Structures are given as C-alpha cells and as structure tokens.
Image (cartoon, rainbow, N blue to C red; front, side):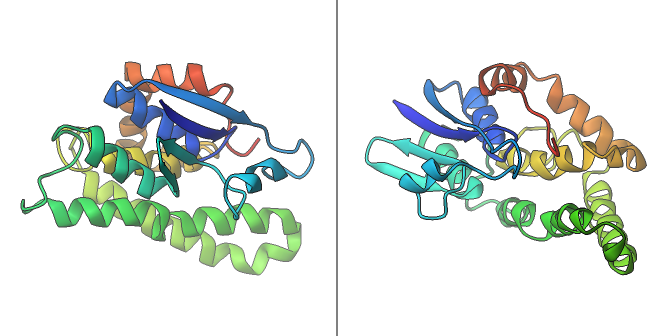
Amino acid sequence: MIKVHHLNNSRSQRILWALEELGLEYEIIYYQRDAETRLAPESLRELHPLGKSPVLEDGDVKIAESGAIVEYLIRTYGGGKFAPAVDSAAYNKYVEWMHYAEGSAMLPLLLGLYTSLLGEAAAPLQPRIQSEFANHFGYMAQSLGEQQYFMGDELTGADFMLSFPMEAANSKGALGFFPNLDAYMKRIEEREAYKRALERGGPYKLGA
C-alpha cells in the first residue's frame, strides 16, 4: 500500500488531496512540527537526509519532493487523467506550471515568511517582497482568467501543485486582492476529495 509521510501544516497536504482525487488507498504516517521552532522532527531524517515532508513510499519506490510525487502518481495511476497527453500542445504549459509552483511562485511567500521573523529590521526589504508578490500572483490571476482550473475546465496536477502557494497566500488574506484566484481556491475547497484529504490529514493551518 502507498504510504505518505505527512507533516502537519505542510506541502504534504496536497499529496493527500491528489491521492483522494485519484481514488487510491493509502496509509498516512503522521509527524508533528516542534511547537516552538515550527521545524519538522528529527525522525524524518531517518527517512530522507533532508528531514523534510512529504515523502511517498509505494512498494520499492521512495520519492521526496511534491512535484516529483505528483508526477509519479499521475503517471502511474492517473489512467490518462490529471495531465495533458505528452504529445499535446498543452503539455509544455502543464510542465511549466508544475515547476513554477515550487519555483518562482514560492519565492515571495518564503521571503515574506522569513523576514517576518526580523521585525522592523526587514522593513527595507518589504517593498521588493510586495512587488514580487504582486508580480507573481498577478501573473497567475491573468493566466487563470475565467477558467475553472489552470489548464482549462479539467483539474490537473498543476492545480495540486499550485494549491499550496494559493493556501499560503490565503492564510494572510492576500487572495482578496485577486478575485478570480480567491474563487478558484473556494472551488478547490468545495471538492469532496479535498475535504476528505483535510479530514485524513488533520488540522491544517499554514503560518500557525
């Protein structure tokens, strides 16, 4: 059976969502962040040298990194769903979104998170951070437009991946500046598979 090493309030929540959308059976091994440092427990290092989550095990296969896990699950169990055909015109854009979600999209969010620990010392950096946030989320809002999902009317792995930066922004109320992204996130939250993933994953509050 598939096993997910799941850290509370982390990227691994979207892996549970992907598994629920795929209708797969899986086991969750739960890990809790340190109450003071908010860091992952050292026990995760026994599984992977980086000591990070998510990590997925499927028989002899062990994979870290959310994007790699999502791609593996869709390729292995998707049955033609959740990704465009490799030889289609849409495939390159799909791959771009998959990488963008953990690359460029996360940069302003991570900068905001880490500089928030510096208090007033971070003030000189804030204009650049806010500019980058507006740039990237404006780009996502423009790209989504009136579509239901990022690749059109059908949910794909790109949405699994992009859900995390959206949730991180939403934890600060920032999606209110982008009405179509806010509506997009609400559509995702209403999906039954997303709700089941939250129930199985446990309390989920980014920034907590």
